[in-house]
Length: 149
Image 1 (cartoon, rainbow, N blue to C red):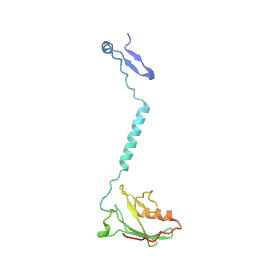
Image 2: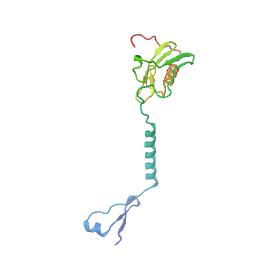
Image 3: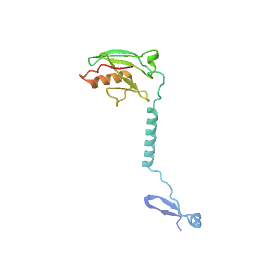
Image 4: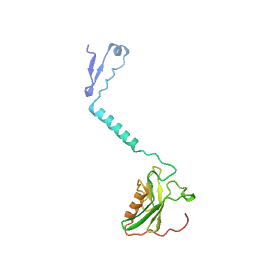
């Protein structure tokens, strides 16, 4: 009697005396293929990339390398300062103006910034968020800020 029986897909099963005596069907031996190895490696690479992209949120400040700025971008004067004292209570609080009008920035949980002009796009720094807002505004002007804060 041949103890090895071919199954579909090229796998073999072992009909040993123990499997015949117990009445259980033989078990298929798993085959390692190039495709299964490739899928495992692809999954590991994707997981490693995702882990490396996670940045911890820096609490208590606007982030590393944050500096005040005062420059002209696309013909607009953009000024950004980091307030000191009680008004700096917000994490990553910036006072930003475009041509003298206040532009609100918000710091996201991942440490990036977004502006009130385009609150769907995240930018790595406050300056990048302001420049993106100016580019989005085009010829339009910010409305004068009314109310508190």
